[in-house]
Length: 102
Ligand SMILES: [Zn+2]
Image (cartoon, rainbow, N blue to C red; front, side):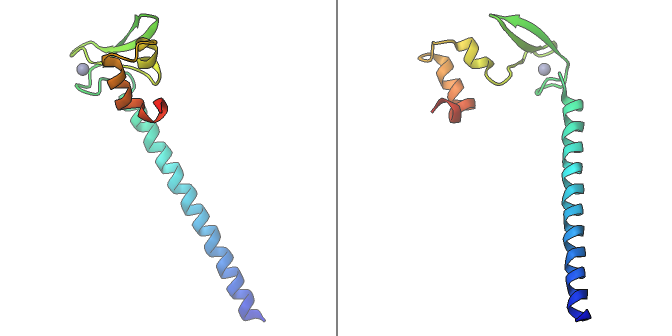
């Protein structure tokens, strides 16, 4: 019977190791994500300069101080577009939020 016991414990050990490996992998992925967030926080996605927050039509938008690129948070484009979905905005909203719009 000791043979099957050994097998059982070996399998248990392997499962523990696999769980630990998955946990460490997940922690590493989260740490990498946090590093990226810190590195890019309030930085322009085009030129890397710092972004400045401006209140525009009731929405806080980020504007790059160097190149003028604008960054909108999720839902802000919809807020800016308001009920006017027939214009230029609808095309842009479809581009970014297509899944939500349908
Ligand atoms: Zn920029």
